[in-house]
Image (cartoon, rainbow over all chains, first blue to last red; front, side, top):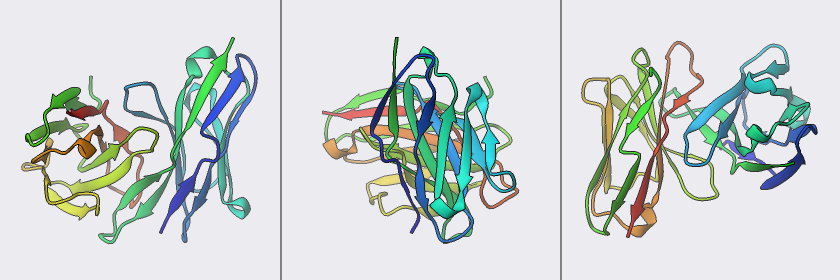
Length: 116
Length: 115
């Protein structure tokens, strides 16, 4: 069965500093990978996705992620963090169900705190 | 607003009561998903609809839970005889068909508190 591991429960970054959030997945076939962000009490907003092709994908709000098949990783990066980036970040893998359709399996999330 | 909407946003109920949540997906999306998210966890899949057909149900979806999408548009999730363990955020998402895996667009969620 598919799974996603986000090793860091919390990360604190100074405003203006760079950010990398780690994500490792386990899935037997070609993975479809996603990063979502969730602000307190809110639903999830898609930051970026990887389906195929270029392994470096660009997303909204200045985020990017790199798919590394050899490491089963899909780490999220941002060169300069803003205070408004403070939120919880979820990595997810899209996997096929028995019906032949897909659902998302999420990691437990990484809470990003931004210090002044 | 043409995003996914959910109603109510918050629900407080007493143990043993029934509750029903509604989800309105993005209008052109024919796939609809329900997830449950508890504190400190990522969302967990509950069930999935393609148009009005419920095609997948998670083992998390006990027999106290039922979901419908009668006309292939909005969906309802009902929990009967609520228990304190049902307290969670219930998220709805929708997506296009066209490929087997598509990005899902999430609603704001319904936060359920069972006293």
